[in-house]
Length: 57
Image (cartoon, rainbow, N blue to C red; front, side, top):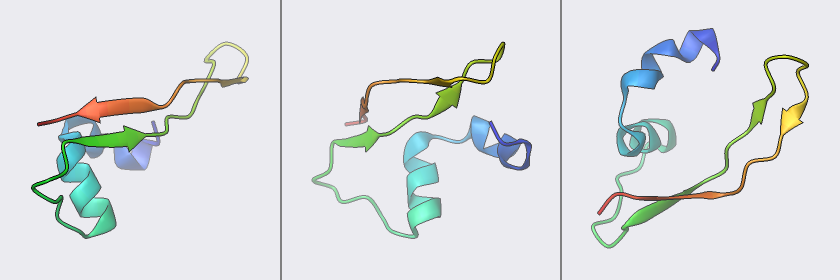
């Protein structure tokens, strides 16, 4: 994570989405599609992570 965003680690994903996009989630929306990026701690190589379907309702 980016140290400047450390407080975001405690936030709900839906709250983060609304804060960052400045939009309310539709009542019809039941999931978010998340694209995650990461790198290996040992050698810094990018890690391939599949798209995550985050079901919240």
